[in-house]
Length: 343
Image (cartoon, rainbow, N blue to C red; front, side):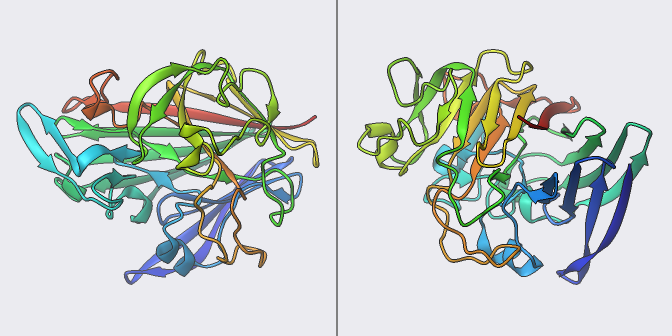
């Protein structure tokens, strides 16, 4: 078990650090302080997530590769919220919607070092960021912490903590693009995927929630493992606009490995469990092509799969979904666990 750090460049005249957590076995995770971003996850010597070589690409691309997403992950319709009768106008960075916390989201903030612990069975890193009142239009200051832990069993745990000074919506997630092939020139559509969910949320043309529907008999039925491409019928009305999957699934048992992703090319398998009720399946359908990745490969459509564990999207504005308001002084907590293995 060990952790080390090094310089990764400068942003707004402040140093950006890169932290490397290694479990002494098969798993090494690299995190940069800009956006508390996961830059690389190496399992048995193969990098399994998309990332950039330099800081400028993370700042300019707006791909959210590996980034921590907040104050509210996903889209908020009309870029506005109503809390206790008061309306708050939010940053609108995707049409009229506020996406992933707006232009001033957590992904573009410098997270400060808090602590690191090297133990017999695990190594952890803790970072923090204080979001000021009305940042991107959201009410109240929020003190945020994130703790990354890598253990001897080739597991990465991400814990999120947040405490607002005023009632505020909070939904935090990680936006890593997984590709378990060991070859980023190939897409992820032949990865097999299982999602233990009997329901998904249908979306409108702005990717905002319409209603909850059953997965049975639809391309959204991943209750048994299948290649991602198998039922990805782009003529389906829910897949046509988004060019593929970009949808929320309501998990049956979030804490019992409800998500399993496998590359049969490498035999690498990723199991995900979470405290959250929903996972967003996004297959980089609209990833800008031609960006340069870590090892010189260029970005292509369907190059990575995001499995964003989180609360229900646009929950604060959708009466058919439970809201995500955290009361002043209460602590938000979320934990997602990523277990790597060889099948």
